[in-house]
Image 1 (cartoon, rainbow, N blue to C red):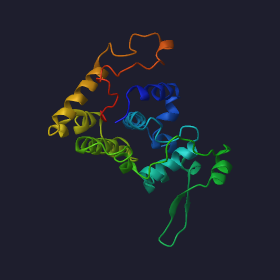
Image 2: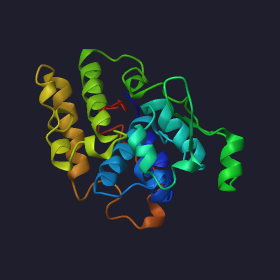
Image 3: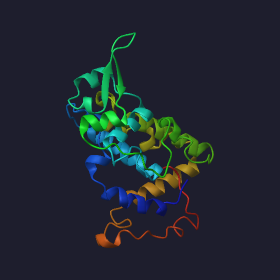
Image 4: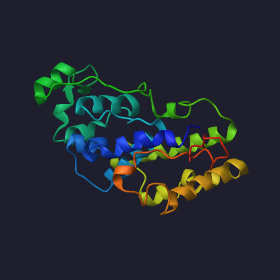
Length: 235
C-alpha cells in the first residue's frame, strides 16, 4: 500500500515526541480516573500513526487535540464531561430548549480559561471526518486490501473508544481478526505476504535492533526483500 521504508523517518519523529502528548487519552485530558485503558488508547494512536504516517490528533495544543477528537470520534458522553476535573478547560454547559447541553469552547474561550494561547492545527494530512475514512484513505488496491482495511478499522474503533469502559481489553485486541489474520483466509497470497512482513517485526534481529541509536535514522533499502517492489499491505 505504501513503501515500508517511507514510514521509518516519520516513525523516528513519532518516537521522539513526548508520550504524554502523543498518546493522551480523553480521560487524561478531562481529568477522569485513570485505568489501564489509557494504554489501549495509546496503542490505537500508534497504529493510526503507522497507517497515516502522521498523528491522528494534534500534539502541539490540547485544545486542538480535543477539538479533533470530537470531530473524528464524537463528543464524550455527558456523564464523562460532568465528572471531569478539567472539563471546564475544553467544554461549557449551556441551557438549551431540551435541557443543558455541552459544547466545545471557542479558541478565545479556551485561552481565557486556561491562560494558554490556542494554536491552529498543523498537519500534512486533512483531518479525517471519522475513523471510517481510514478505509479509503489510500487508493483502492483490490478486495484483499479492502477487507484488511475494514478489519483494521474495526480494531481501531475498539482501541479508540472515547469511553474507557467500552474500549477493547488487551486480550480482546490480540484475539481480533486483524491481528490473527483469520479474515484473510480467502486471500492466500495477501495473507502470505502479510505473514512474512509480520515475521520481520517479530524478529529481534530485524532492522535497527542492534544498531547504535545515532544510526537508526537511516532508512534501509527493502527493495530487494520485496523483489524490487517496495509496496506492502496494511499489516
